[in-house]
Image (cartoon, rainbow over all chains, first blue to last red; front, side):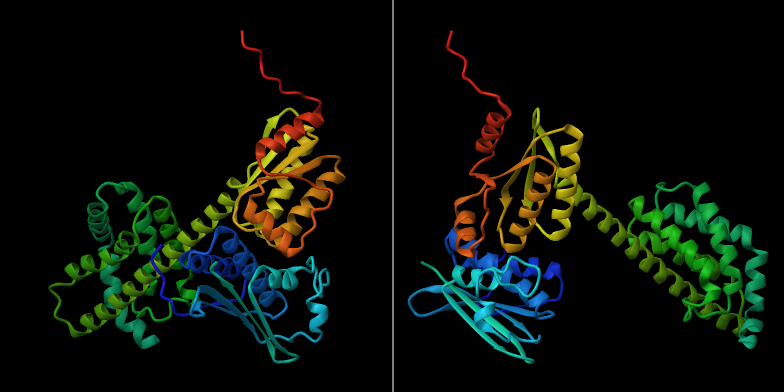
Amino acid sequence: MPPRSEGPEELPISGDDDVVRVRQLVRTYAQDTKLSLVDQTKLVTAASELARNTLIYGGGGFARVEQVSDGRRAGVRASFHDEGPGIPDLTLALADGWSSGSGLGLGLSGARRLVDLFDLDTEVGRGTVVTVTKWKR
Amino acid sequence: MTADAERAQTLTDLLRANSEPLIDQWVSAVAALLRGRSTRVELEADFKEFFAALLPLVGRDGKDTGGPEFAEIRSLLEEYSRTRVRAGFTPSETAASVFSLKRQVFDLTENSDDPQMFRQLMAFSGLLDALGLLTFEFYARARDEIIREQSEQLLELTTPVVKIWEGVLAVPLVGTLDSARTQVVMEKLLEALVETGSEHAIIDITGVFAVDTQVAQHLLKTVVAARLMGAECIVSGIRPQIAQTIVALGIEFGDIVTKASLADALRHALRREGVDVVRREAQ
C-alpha cells in the first residue's frame, strides 16, 4: 500500500459500503502510525461503530481521518460528522444497552471505551460530531 | 424533418442499391480487424440486421439516439456488445465494428462531387459516431453486470459450510461481515444443519478482522436460530485483540461456547458427540 500523507482525508458516509471504506481507511492510518495490533483493532472497531451511527442515526455524513501528534507520541484521530437530528439525552445515549434503534446499544458507549480520547459535540436539530483519538503506546 | 428525409434519399438509395457488396466489404474489414476470432458467417448475420435497421435512419445526425426510431438498432447493438463482452473482445474492437462501415460508405461515394451527397455523408458519419459511442456504453453496462454477478458469486463462495465430522459442521468466515453476508451464512448454515442432521456447528471467525456490535449481533442471531433448531453453535477463532475489543465494547456472549481455535472447538464438539480422540500407543 502506498504511504499516505499525514494530512486529513475525508470519506463520505452514505451507505453500508462506505462504512467498510471508512473502516479500511482508519485501518491504513493505524497501520502507518504503527499502533499495536490490539490498538489497531480497537480503533477500527470504534470507527466502525461511529460510522454506522453516522449512517443510521445521523442520516449520513462524512468521516475525517488524520495522523496527529501531541509532541510526545503519534496517534490517529477520526471524526464523524452528520447534520442529523442530534442527540437529545447524552447520558442516555452513552448508557450501556440503551438504543433508540434496533442495535445492541453498545456502539457509542463501547466506542468510548475503545479509544483514548472521546469528544462528542451535538446539538438537537443541528447534528453531531464525534471525534476519537488513539495514541501510540 | 421532411427536408432532411428528402435530402437523404439519394444516399439511402445508394446504400440500398449497393447493400450486398457493402455488407460484404464491411464483414471483410471487421473480420480482418478481429483476426479470425469471429467467423464471417456470424458477422454477416449480425451486420445484415444492423444494415436493415440502419437504412431508415440515414439522414439523422444521431443526436437523438434515445428516440423511439432508434429502438431497434439500440437493441441490436446492445445484444452485439453483450456477446462481445462475454467473448472477451475489447471495447475498441466492439465499437470499431460500427465505425468500419464509414470507410466502406466513403469508398462507395468517392467519385461523387455532389455537394448534396457530401452533406448527407457528414450526417451519416455523425450517425455512425453516435451509434459507435452507444456500443461503448452498452459494453460498459454489460461489463458492470458481469462484475455484479461475480461479486454475488464471490459472496456465495466465501461462505462455505463444510462438514468436518459426522454431526459437526464448520463455517469459516473471512473478511468483512455485513448484513448481506451474514444473511447468506445464516441461511446456508441452517439449511446444512437440516440436510446433514448435524447437532453441532462451529463458526470460525479467525479471518474476520474486527468484530463490532453489528457483527456480534449477527453472530448472536445465527446462534439463537441454530439453537431453536436443536443445534449447538460454537464460535471459534477469537484472537487476543478481538477478545479485548469485545470486552471493551461490553458485548455479552452469554452462554455461547467460544474457543480460541478451530481445533479446540472441534475437540469440544466431538466430546459432546460422545467421540473420544485417543493417541495410538507406540508399537
